[in-house]
Length: 109
Image (cartoon, rainbow, N blue to C red; front, side, top):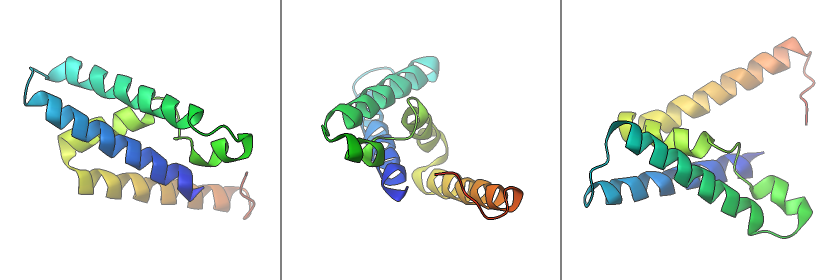
């Protein structure tokens, strides 16, 4: 479901930008930075679920997981955006290929 992946990365980049902006005006380091990324990721993920009222579209637009966007934003902050996005997408492709091989081409929907 590419829309969920796109919305997850959109929320992660939004959280990363907010953390970058806030770190210029307040002390954000270590555990505070990680916790803020997780809380903001959870909040924006929650917003992505309640904005769309249609029950059919909420599954395709909602972000993946509750804390995944915050974790991705934290990794973007530590490693850089391009490296994080490429590693996450490469890992997702490898996992999907392993599932295809293990289950004989049948992918769970």
